[in-house]
Structures are given as structure tokens and as C-alpha cells.
Length: 468
Image (cartoon, rainbow, N blue to C red; front, side, top):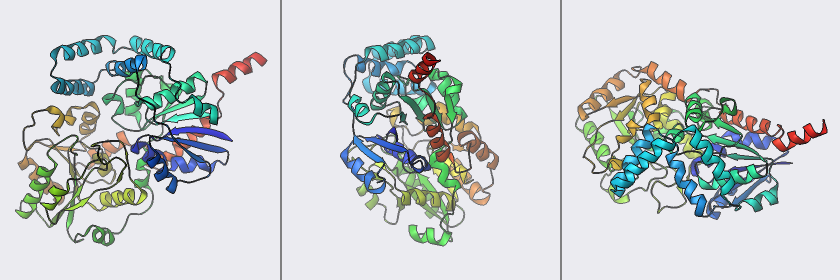
């Protein structure tokens, strides 16, 4: 029996691992045992009810907050890469702290140390000097053969990796999203191999984290497999489910969430006003999709009777806004697939929904104007169009940015009349972000994990060479 450690500290990790064919494919091998690490007993019990194979073990093991040198390197990692997105985030932090000295010192430090030589030195010192054996007991208990870490930007996963490297256990990291490399920080320690979703992320991992190309495997986007597999609900059933007349054209509005914007309700009211005022041609209805990690404002809903909306997900900590403690089950994921299939048009600010809509060849409009001027950039919903990953997406021509209400009306009507407009741009967007359309990315990644377990570790290689 071989043992794999997998972290599911964040809701998006659970969606990528448990709710794709990664888990199913791993468990097809009868010699595989999996230990899943979560942050809370509530989450462990929640997942265990649904994923209860006898070879699945749940451990609640959230690492304490870093201190001493650990805290220093956890802070330093934000200065060791420099991108347009990290520059934007540094400017937003200045708005909060309002300390020019700290801002300019942080910019100077970033300019000096965001280089390969400093990154190599930081990683070496981090590994040698930081003493954190929080996960040592789990390694002693289970003797893992491989550690698979899907979100190496969190300190828990870095310390699992640290323990694995000390013990010469095989290590594999995953970059599951299109924005993580350019928008977060340096990955403090590097695993032996990486799995990434596409070539763009591979290139970013090489540039900003100095990973060798031969150590990167492109597996695809496992959460998108469902979009290429199986049927969707028929139109009549889906529209009955959401309470809308199936003869109407459906406009999906993706919200930004209160963490990032104060404009969602204004946008909702504006679009509803366009429809009731006859500015949109044809008979349309709006379906508002709130984020699974957002807190729904019940008082605002009461002010808008008749609003059709989805509020997917389970929130494990309903007090935290924009948190990572959430989950979306299979029925909700299938409902999203049906929505993308049956809608006529997507309207949102910067969002990964733009890619998902393009997979179904649905026109995508992104709002690049504000209903009121925000005092702080961090609450401006348009700031994210300045990020590196989103600029690349817009450059494909698959996303229409509109800069005013008049332009929004114009393009809603154009797309409703002719949905094939910008079709080639949407193809380019999908091709860049989702390289595999066979619905087997989860299976591909799981097989790569299994294959890595067959390669000898450095210690095993030393043992082999000493016997020769």
C-alpha cells in the first residue's frame, strides 16, 4: 500500500481534487491510500459524508501562525517577484496604510530582490533556518510515499512540503488557477515537480519562480472537464428550475462580491432598468449569480422582488467575507454547466466565468466603468482589468470590454441579435486557457501523480548507485 498526502485546506482545492476525476482515478489503484488535510473538523466531517472510501483518511491539521524566522520568510516572499499585478496590489496596500515611507521602501526592496539569485538564496536560507516540525507526526504516522500540494502559496502547505523535503519524500505541487503566479507571491520552497493548467501558467512559473521547464507538467483544467462530458438539462427543464419562461433569452450576470466591489446592486438595478425600459431588444430575463464565498445581503434582496438569482455553495464560516472556507457540490456544479449552456450572454466584471462562457461559445461582456467613483482602488471593480492574467485574456478578442452604459446597451443588443460575433476571439481565449478539451484533465493529472510514485527518490538513487 502506497500513501499520498493531499491538502484540501481551501474550498477551491477540494473542488479541484475531490469533485473531479483526480480522486476517482487515484482510488482506482487498489494500492493507493490518501490522507486529506483540512483546517477544521466541520469540513472534514462534511467531506467524509460524501467521500467515504475506506482508503481515504481525513486529518484536521491547520498549522499555527508563523513566528520568528518563519514569519520573516512568509513576509519576504511578497517582495521576491515583480509583476504588474503585484505592483497594483502594493499601491492598494498603500491606500490602506497611508505610509509613504513604507510604500517606497517596499518598492525599493522589491526592485532589488525580485531576481533569480535572491530567490535561490531566500529558498536556501528558508529551508535551512526555519524550524517547523508541526507536520512531523503525520509523516511518522503514515510514512507517505508522495505529497501532492495544490496551493503552495499557503504556509500550511509550505510546511508540509518542508517536512517532505527533509525526509526525501516525493513532492508534487499544482498551480490550479490562471492568476496565482502573477498575483500572489514567491513559492517559498519548490517541490520536485509541478502540474499546471496551461502553457501561460507554465511560462509564468519559469519566469517568476525559476522552475525548470522539464519539471512542469501541463495537465489541463480539471474543473472544466465537466463542460466537455455528458449532456446538459434540456431548456424546458432548466428554465422551469429557475422559474423563467423558456421563450425568453437569458442574460447571466456574474457579481463581483462585496470583498472586491460595492457596485453589484447598482449593476443589477441598471440592467433590470434597461430591460423594463425597453432598451434591450427582445424578451429577456436576468439571472444573477452570486459568488459561493460571498455573503448574500438579504435586505437588498427584499428591495428587489422578482429578482432571479443563484447563490451556490456551502460556507463553513459565514462571518468571513471572501474567505476560502466554502464548497460547491455536484448538483450546483451541474447547475452552473446548465446555466452556461442555456444562457444567451454573460455580463460581469473581471471573472473566470468569462472563460467558462467562452467554452460554450457564449458572448462575453465585461463592465469597464463604475457607477460611482470609489475612494479606494481596492473597491473599484474595474481595477482587475490592469492585472497581467486578465490583460492576456482580453487580448484574445474573446471578451468585450465596454466603457459606458451606452456601449453596454449597444453590445447587449448586438450579441443577442448575432451571437457569432467575436467567435474567433472566444476560440483563442479557450485555446490559451484550456488546452485540453477531451474532458480528461483530472484523469491525466491523477495518472501523472501515480507515475511519479514509481520514480526513485534521491535517497533511493544513492542507494542504487552504492550497490552498483
